[in-house]
Length: 287
Image 1: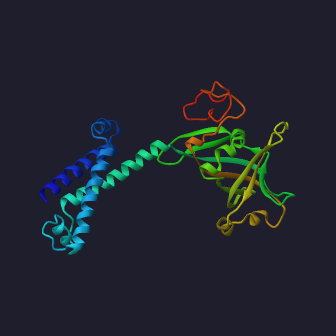
Image 2 (image 1 turned 180 degrees about the vertical axis):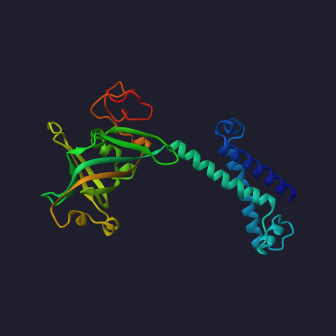
Image 3 (image 1 turned 90 degrees about the vertical axis):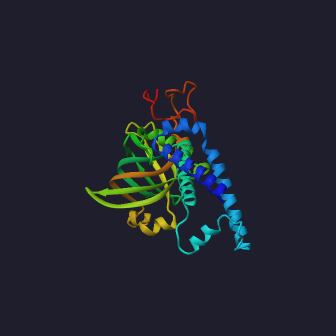
């Protein structure tokens, strides 16, 4: 027991110290963790957990085994007592390790982005084919793109490029089509919020001198329909126009960045394509 306990305490306390340091100061921690990589701590903790579980299994078969180093600890815990310093330190190390790994995973995956759009004269309409659409010729020219926590990025992209790249940004490989919350204003009064899935995005009449028409095809889940249905928004009509709407669109990952499909942007000398993306730090914008 002294050997097991001292080893457990040493590794656990070392893990606690280094992982706490990593959480407090990434730059300082990286130099220490370079000497003792976190995965070595993982293996050490896994070995200790394996040893502890083996002793626990053995103790079930032989509850009075005098060679069981956790016999006293088990009895203390069964009586409602607190774990030993070693066990408490090991538990704290495991928690810190889990938090550290989650933080590193977030860094590797990058931020998730959400989108905000605004439009005037928002029209909800049932098409001849029976589909429900939201359309407007008066979308604001820019779409705001901002990151989900813990990141704090924000930028503006063109609304036309967002529509053009919609199927690239939201596809079956990255979670499917997005949910969107639409706020509705009529006669300077906020009327309602309706949530729907945007299953398709199209830009029509691009060459129209009065501007293009932006169209979203809408479909609701049963849960979305049960709160505020599109039929309620339509008011029993085939077409309903609202003075203004704001649209809040579900997140897309950093790898799903929005490309300029019809132009060359900074850092994309080979022309348009998925690699030509709107990214933070691209001060020159499209060209």
